[in-house]
Length: 286
Image (cartoon, rainbow, N blue to C red; front, top):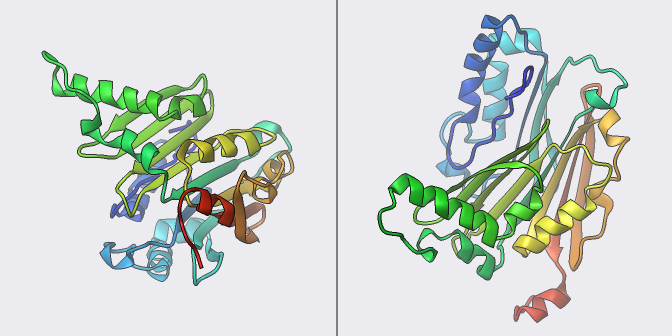
């Protein structure tokens, strides 16, 4: 939560968009009017498991258009980036923000979604991998294991200097929020074999994300990952485009970009592990 901005990220079957009317009302109670809304998600693996209004992107857009307080104030649009036969990204943006040329008035959000993470890495996020201690309350145990998972997995090194708030889940799973001045980083991990996943999102204002992205990928060693970048033109002009960089032994399989509203640039890329690395890990591909 920022003085004039709120970032809300959820997972699973949470009905995220159903809070937007309440958020608008809360803002108005503080004398604030909404002037920017951005909603985005990757295509669901199991869309049939989702609850209204998240059963399709069309349904989500109709739900947003149906909010009178939102549609009267902002006239947003929805977009699809990436191959519809593979991983793709849905984006809705409604933007009336008046920006200046100041570096402080630029925005960018980078999101890395990693699939089929290395099994040895995934083991760090099973609750029972860590010993129980006598005379320790459940709250103390969870806090200790959360911190151990952050350290042993290497996540702590991805956010140097930041205030980290981790949470380990039973029987497995992990989430983390980290804050460093005006920047945030957030993670969610599900380590189950066959459907393992890890995400890393940040709004850090750096000139190059290459080393950060490489460190994240090396930490989790996924077989494939999806990367998205949402930035205004001012923010995009101050960075090296991370979607055009080369990452270790991964090969980019697709790339898509679009400019929406007046000033918002959205980009998405898919990467898969190279055939040589698959052979090193004992995989066969055809």
